[in-house]
Length: 164
Ligand code: HEC
Image (cartoon, rainbow, N blue to C red; front, side, top):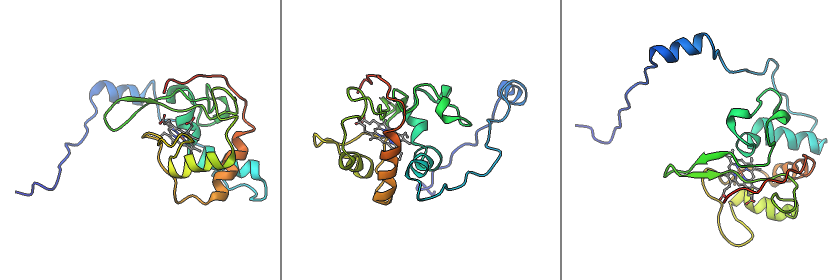
């Protein structure tokens, strides 16, 4: 017997799920145009491109997947203000962090270097590590992380204390 191979039973949607997805729900919206890399001399535009389109930071870091707007991300509830209930590998809830420029509840007081350490290596100022599902991004060039930082300083500051 091959015990090393885990066989997963195929997922079979039941009648109600099929009915709903063919009637009420429909397919999720999808961008109609390809998302192009913006002018790379424009730091804000490339920062937004990485944070929103390429690495999907906004999706976890806005209030809730249910209220995120994939077609108009800026219209997502609590854009970058955290509080999205996510699960760690033990199935426990870990809320995403507020990364708007709010000085008290966001990262308004963070330096670019602190931000880089957190995003690249998951390292916080106090020496602790960021928890899953926040991943490390060691393959990202520093320049991209710096551009994300520059862009995030321009999004509206939202005061939202996230339970950690
Ligand atoms: C899969 C969901 C997810 C994605 C995608 C994600 N994050 Fe996070 N992020 C989190 C969670 C959850 C935390 C809080 C971790 C904790 O409390 O230990 C966090 C924490 C952070 C922090 C630390 C803030 C603080 O106050 O401690 C920063 C900075 C950050 N993320 C930036 C980013 C950037 C930039 C991206 C995109 C490159 C990104 N995150 C993508 C889930 C995510």
